[in-house]
Length: 250
Image 1 (cartoon, rainbow, N blue to C red):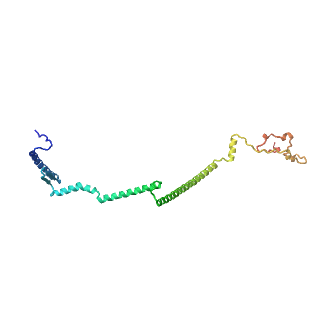
Image 2 (image 1 turned 120 degrees about the vertical axis):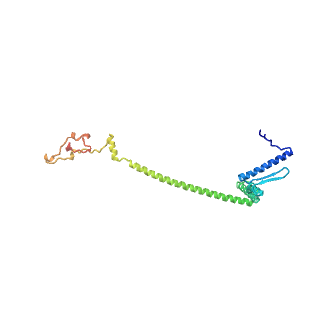
Image 3 (image 1 turned 180 degrees about the vertical axis):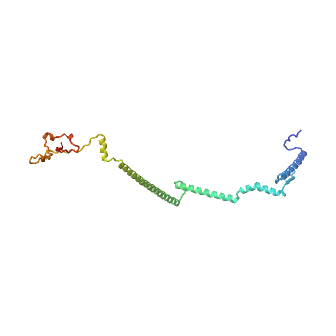
């Protein structure tokens, strides 16, 4: 039958308490020794009884070296992160200086806006007025320069657009000239479409254009054919397109 679980609480019996302390103390020291030997660890154990008696074990030659090592590992990082007193004071003075500078800038900004002017003296008001005039001149100069730059930019853009417009107009004129139809082609297309073309008609030469030769020799009068008045009026449609037909060819 195994041992039952012991309830962890203070042993009221003084003799039993001393016996239990001696047994468990020896077992704890034994465990510490075994741990240092088996695992090659640096172990230090300190025990104080209820009467104040010291029991200790240390795997190293001196327990003080182990305690110093523990102190460096436990409290060294905290002391390294803790700033010294001089640094704290310097930081506090820097905070006060920056706070004063911020308050001064805020008061100056309010004065520039026309607020809190009552505490200012006449000299301070004159300095504030001079500062405002200087700032106003600077703002106006910057504004004028900005407007001049914008105007110059717009003029350059206008020149570019004019050049582009000129080039497009020239291309349009060249395209119109290339697609323009010659006059003789227009006349030919009009004739093909069945339109009437008006030609110049010349009047028929009268009989007086050819005069009979004197002497009445018929041989010498070849080509002369006297016509009556009814033959002189020849219809226009019987003429050539040139409008000129001599009387001897009829």
